[in-house]
Image 1 (tube, rainbow, N blue to C red):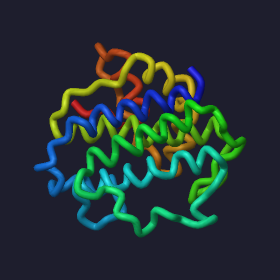
Image 2 (image 1 turned 120 degrees about the horizontal axis):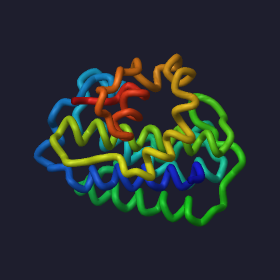
Image 3 (image 1 turned 180 degrees about the vertical axis):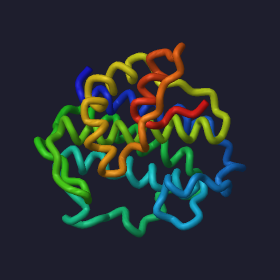
Image 4 (image 1 turned 60 degrees about the vertical axis):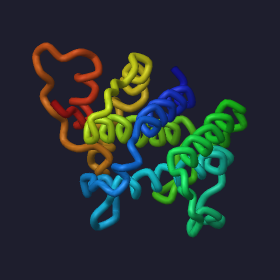
Amino acid sequence: MSPAELFLHSDAALREVVDQLDPADFSAPVPPEWSQHESPTLRDILGRHVYDEAWIPDVIAGRAAADGDPFADADLLGDDPIGAYDALNAAATAAVRNGDIADTFRFTYGDYPAAEGFAHLATYRAFQAYSIAKHFGIPFHLSPELVDGFTEHVTPHADEWRQWGVFPPAIDPPADADDETRLLCTLGFWIR
């Protein structure tokens, strides 16, 4: 699986979870480590994902927020947050599938080769999908394709990225762990 395909699978996984959210839960608190807000809610997290999706076409074209941020003060959630997310997710998917990808992705935290940049973007999406689903009781599993893609493109960097705060400490997997559980334990995300 290519890094771009890993992103597409991860982006689809997050959309699968977002589409199952109950708008009645938007004001529900979420773990503070999910956000830089003092008391984040599910709506805050969805807002962050909408913002992130809005940026994908620009990021993969090599542009950065330092060039100007047209989304900084925009109300991207509007009256239909899930619909807004779905529309921006579709635009991001189309941009990646178009294949016009810059050699370097310029994130606010640094510049990275496109392959690694896609791994960063995929990691954020897939593990937020898993975490949100677990927190709100939404049935969800990482697909075998995602497990294989993360094993190939992300686990080799797990210890390095853990030092940056991307991953929590690794967890010892249960003796009968399947591939998904072993991956989640390696990256510190497994929840019983």
